[in-house]
Image 1: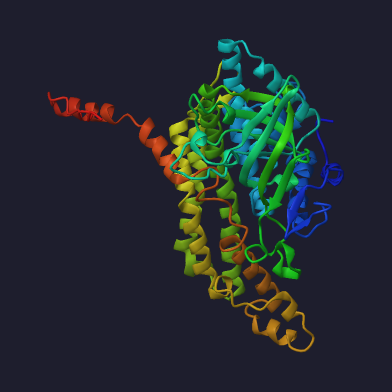
Image 2: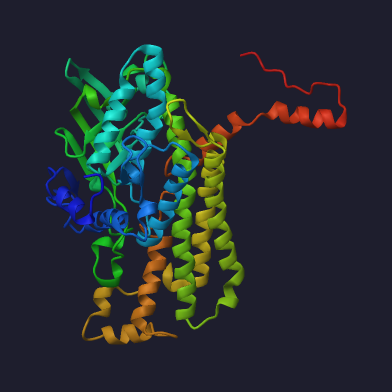
Length: 485
């Protein structure tokens, strides 16, 4: 198959075993249920963009493994242009659907993150993880899979390590294994896009040490595998996709808690199993790729926010000149995170196995900007748009459709344009700035404090002091003595 259409994707999703729940009920069909249908529709849009001559080069590429054209999210990234394609595709995707689409992002990143370390393990340990991973990547490419990536564990008591927890399940772990494969139990939480995924790629959420082997697992699992239960967490109070008319922005992602109960995974779909030494390397590769590309994600949504804020100002009867400084700052914020991602990508290097990994220091610096600048962009969008977009005071679509008083409500919203158009734009700004259109800027892909820790560890502080000493001709070494514990 290699390239799939949106209609083909939806047809395949309809055939999956129902295992997604919300509001205490089983979602029988994720493609039609109000809780998930908008998400599925938007993932399908990415498949259709892959077949559109205008966008095909952005959403597809020539596979380094097969030599065939494939969806970009099924391929190995071997050079800076491949990883830039990741960032540029996501910026365009955000412009089209307003939010992130986990099934065409995180699972792909897990595969690429593991590509180099599995090669290293095979060389050092004599395993065959790399061959397994290549085979699965070819399978994912040929079947044009949508794949979520599951990193975040429940974690339990944060003061304790995985092997010190009272309940093993707060970290995904190998509960047992046999000659056929492994069995996984535990909880992965706040995982993006699982409702729209055909496979879930699991990996450790942190580096691991000896004694923590059972938590060192990287594997590919069908989203509808027996023993896996997914609880969808997005709520109408913060996401209007389940409401009607212009109250329901027909876009957005999904978030889920994944509950594993002895889920079987055959050995051929396991790419790390107990080798704690390599868990940190896979995690480091993942965060470098993800935190470089997310600069394009938030810039793409920022582009929409600029348009929505300016559109709202014009609907209010005001000119661009009155808000130009704010609009310019929004554009600066967008291009700062986008450029930070590009810098990390082009300062990266190629692993001997062929995968390209962005520069970790610059990628984590970008993550810190991503945790801050989009929030400022949202604040500016609200300032420009006016109180109707963020105070929660606007009447509902159902009230505005009421035959008795609805016409007067719509009339009350009229300004330079009709009340209906002004209301629609206001709802979009609301969704983008205080609703479920907000991507995980602060903690998505990891916390900013973790990124700062990487920056601290990767920065050569004493070397910088030496630069200054040499210029000032200072003979004293100006080194800090490490305190004995």
